[in-house]
Length: 357
Image 1 (tube, rainbow, N blue to C red):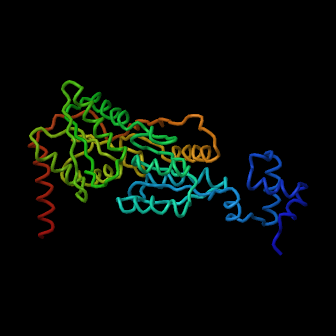
Image 2: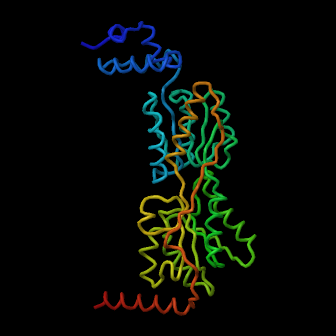
Image 3: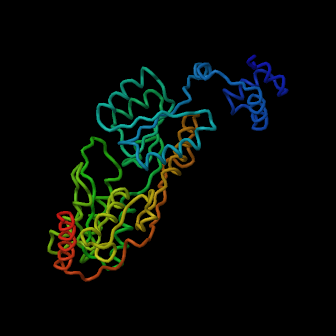
């Protein structure tokens, strides 16, 4: 037979109303009493109807995560961070991967009807003024993670992309590099991603530093980053001695592709990434570390504060980054273009001969 609220109250030695408040209004119950009630409820396998609590309090106990693009390393860490905070509070979250305008419009059209979120957490892109106005009119707080314009959100946490990429550039310049390229994917998305501030930050600093030539190279969507890097190195009279890659997942394949064409890392080319994601340490990639799991945990706590009518202690937080120095960067070597091409031609000829044989 299923345990009732009366059973929990009797065993815990409290009133029925106290049991009810322990689940629906925990702020009105002492921590000691609440823990006791929850322990007894767990022993009796008792649970309060989620829908009943939602109706009573006018809450859904759900937070919506709008993630820009497909679920990748960064988004996966965001999910881990949200779950680490929300799991024990009785909240869950729904994930909406927003890749184009149709998905975005559908979410905002359906939200007023479904009213299925108490707060919105947006990862990596900005909402339009109309979207923020609609959410505020519904009383739904908005929290941003790595958003380009944090002031448009009720609360936010994110890195300073401009400062972060300039840390990498200064490291390369300190090593002696004066010709530096930046590889990034040309955006075809209508979303305004905060990470593209790195491109502007890279160009700005290179323009400010005497004797430094910075070249930002946009890789077309669907093109191979390694092929673009190889073409850049072999087609220019004065190729870059260092390449900054927009994210680790693009930089790591270079460790396996470039040596096939006689381009050695870091002897011929220094390579940097961004994120400090999976396998960056294993391949020795110099990169910038950001901590999306920690940022998401902070964003979840901000969202809970706003849902419960509390103002977060710090509404807008700049998260720290760290330069991770590894073996993929070194001082540039004087390497003539002809020598690079000769190694590439020898390597290519040998592979062609072996295939032909």
